[in-house]
Structure formats: C-alpha cells, structure tokens
Image 1 (cartoon, rainbow, N blue to C red):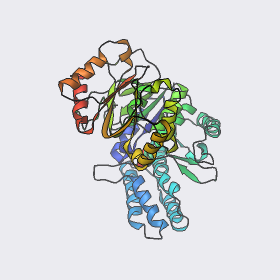
Image 2 (image 1 turned 135 degrees about the vertical axis):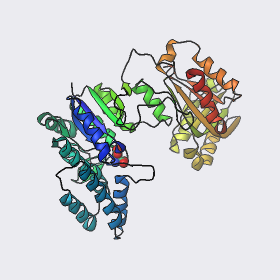
Image 3 (image 1 turned 45 degrees about the vertical axis):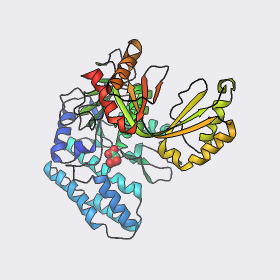
Image 4 (image 1 turned 90 degrees about the horizontal axis):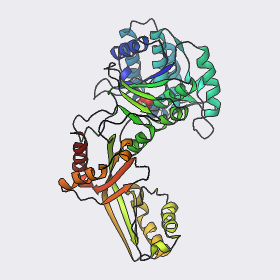
Length: 436
Ligand code: ASP
C-alpha cells in the first residue's frame, strides 16, 4: 500500500520542523510520495513565505524595489539548508526568480516558487527524486484543474519514480505559464497525487492532532473527532469549520481513498480519519458542531400558498436573478422562509423584495437580519432517538430562543437558527449537553 504524505507550511517552517517531517517519511516505507507546502510561520508574528513572495510580486509589478522581502525569502531557505547541513545551493533558482520579477513579473509563478524551492530542499534531504509539478499537473484554458490531462501523465511519472517529492500548490496552464490553486492549495495537490497513484491513504500532516468537534475559540479544548465521513465534513466545513482546502476532498473521495489528518509535532497521535463510509460510531452521537453568524431570514406569508404549485419557484427566481444563493427554506402551510447570507443579500435587498411583492403578491413580507446558524452534524443521529430533544432542551435551559429549525431527510444534520448575540452560548450549550 502506498501512502501520500502532504506537509503543511507550519510542518516545514524551519530546519527543526523539516527534521520531524523527514523522520515521519523515513519511519514508514509505504510513505512514497511527499507533497510539501512552502515554509509557513515559525511563530505568530512571523510571515509565511507565500505572503513574502506575493509582496515581492506586488512591488515588482509596480516597478518598485522588492529587495527586502526577497532577501527575507532567501534567508529563510538558506537557514533551512544550513540547519539540515545539506550540500545544496539555491542561488541559481533565486537568480531565475529575481530575473523574472525584474523583467516579466507573474503573480502565480512568483507565489509557486515557495513550494518549488521547498520541494527541492525536501528531495535533497530525503535523497529522492524531485518531480516539478509544472511537468505533471495541468490547468485548462479557464484556469481550472485539468483532470483528463493530468492523471495519465502524473500516474506514469509517479510509477517510474521511486520515492519522490512533488511540490504542492501549482501546475502548468494551457498557455504554458505557471498556475496556482487558491490559497491553501497544496492540500489539493496532495489529494491529486494520492488519486493518481491509487494510494491507500492520503496523510495530511499539520500542526493539530486532528479535527476538533467545535471551534476552540468558543469551546476551550474541544474533543477531537476520530473519524468523520466526507459528507459530514462537507457540512461542517460549509458552516465554517476550518479543515483542509475544500476542493481537496473531491479527488480522493471519488477514488475512495481515506484522508488521515496528522500532527507533525505529535506523530504518535492517531489523528482524524476522513472516510467514505464507516461502521464506527462517533463517541458522542454527534460528530461536530459548526456555525456562522450574519444570515437573514425573509418570511413570506400568503394564505393558500400551497395550492399554487409555482409559488416556491417564483420566489426562488427573485433570488436567482440577483445571484443570491438560498441557504435554507423552512416552511409552514401558509408561510415560507428563505434564509440567505446577509452579505450577499443586503446589496440587492430592495430589488429582491420588490420582485417578490410583484411576483407572488404576499400578504406580508418580513425581513430579519442578525441570525446565526448552527449545524449539529452526526451520522449516528439517524439511528438514535432523542438527539433533537437534547439539542433543544440544552438551548431552552440556557434560555436561548430558537428562530429556525431545519433537518434534512438524510438526518445527517440539524440546523438551528438563533440570534447572533446568542451564538456562542448556544454552541456551548449544545456541545456540553453531548460531550460533558
Ligand atoms: N503556500 C500556499 C499558501 O500559503 C499553499 C499552501 O500552503 O497550501 O496558501
């Protein structure tokens, strides 16, 4: 079984971190392909290499002097090389980047060099082959990842290499220029490499021992999630739980490869398994809680709306025309409620409301802002009774008024809407009722 190991920026921030990553790779022969990010922050006041490179580009494109941030970039890499006692010089590579910045600055190219240079160091440190992502990962003319072109080339190249390093975050565009994924995109590269080599596991090494059941800013020291399905993860991530790059799920999900989130600073921890299916139940009935503030509800009331089969469509159209995605649609017999993001709604508010008024002639139309949505997610919910009761009891005990409830037929999650100001208290109440 082959494993693909991706190391995030904090896992490769300096020589000490590199040594931990190297030991992890060497300790398991099946860890064959390594995908590094660019060096991240060494402490909270530090600057990521990628950010320094973007700064170089911004200055260069205005014809200004980029010496300071560029020197900082070079110093960081040289320190890592020295710390690892490697016999490697990146001066030629630095000169090429400088030359490009001076004569033809390109944003994606510049940013991608963070991973490129780190990949060169990692390959030298592990004594294995370096595969430039520009030779094996391709983007189409619209700038999206080109799976059809990438997989045959990448699979063949990985097959012929032994242990190899493929830098994350970038590939080659249709126009022959370097393209990057969006920020955090090395996660996507790792997932693509895992899918291309039909890996048994995609290990994503970071600085936490897995996914947390709730936001640690609200719940101090929340429990870790030991296993979660892709679908549960999508629900939590959509509601703001920060995990990996959103697009990194799909390549491995489609190939049926599990993801194991691991901690470079605590490699003995089992981490979190992200899987397609599992017979394992989560320890606490619910898998996790996530939420976001600042939604709006638009309550439309009209007697006998249910006898008009086109009523919902007409309302939905008023939002569609203004490019506002609908988040939830809880309904009553003569009322329907549309929940949308405040930030997406406010700008077109009056257009939408007047269109609804003209299109379905409601008896009343009420708008309320400042609503927070909380998603309580758990695959074990559908086989257990009393989950909803527990959630609402916890909220009632904390005297929190529930403004909206939505539970999908899949019973994977229960969404509750509360006022923004009750959000933190509501999350705590629900968490404590299941975990503590
Ligand atoms: N270095 C890039 C970033 O900072 C990509 C990554 O780390 O995944 O966004």
